[in-house]
Image (cartoon, rainbow, N blue to C red; front, side, top):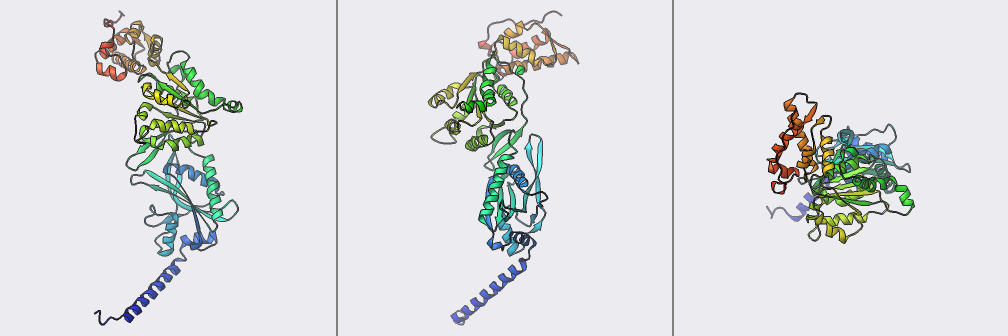
Length: 475
């Protein structure tokens, strides 16, 4: 065969094949030049698809609602979205889908694809997940605005993409910048309570909207004046922000609440969040500390803001962020990196202040108030007992109960009162009051449950003073 098939013949055959392929390509392009999808884009832009300039901006997946709200605010009233129909829409950029429609017709003009995304604790909004809409740049140049949210295999948002198409790069960039400014002004996260977590499967952050806590000062049982001190530092500085800045004082502040587990640190944080209804609150969990820089930037953008990191002693011992420096140093650096006029509070809690003391002392100024949340004293325990009785009357002598609970946490007393109410319910279907009998039975039960006492923050048997068991008063 090689002897009969000479070089001239092979060159002739190759040339013929090349002409066939070129003609086929021209025919395909001619057939698809009338694609409604491509035509819709090029007719508005006034140029061929090959001359279109693409400007993109990538956002985190959970920022899609804010992005869509900004696009809608930018568009003139009555703007109509279109969609793209065809295979593999989730894996290509918008321009790739247009090129596919131009070359082989796989993607066609269709209806926009919508989905519901959270914008509050119990609120969602409909947004365009994949679509494009004709618009105009600030200078009047025609543009096409496209949006696309990429989802993981289990519905986890991975990223959101803003695409602006135009015959002019300046016009496309100006449109992108105008939408970015609107996104900042209309951010759906502003004034919300946000919780950051981390998805190990998709290696991306997860954001949840939480209801803002409503806790009154009467429900926070601390030694006299302590809550006022904390509130004045976290809330009061924000209330005097303009006057402080005018006096040349800084606004950013860091507060450390330390003390044994179960004494009310988290409860105090809940109270503070309730006292700052307009502030953006960001709760950062341990695994999501890798997003610390972004969270701090978000807090700065959405100020007034408060960043809450609980159990920061665990952060101090976590070296997953850097082999050379634990996460605590990254946190302190991020706190120091904020401008002094940033109305951002950092509220840190810990059960082990000694783990943090050396690091905080080595970097002064990051935390400017450290407050110990102690175990409740006798007065505090009585207030807790009456608080957790709720709407039931206490017809009992609380003196022995207060003595019996010396050295326990607020969490222990809360559980004690739950059991006392349960004992009253078992005795009467509709109890009106809690009596000595109810308290005596529960205290005896809990005294015998050593592990339960340890878990709830009660004293162990070796730490207790010898005290005879309580006996119910005669009715």
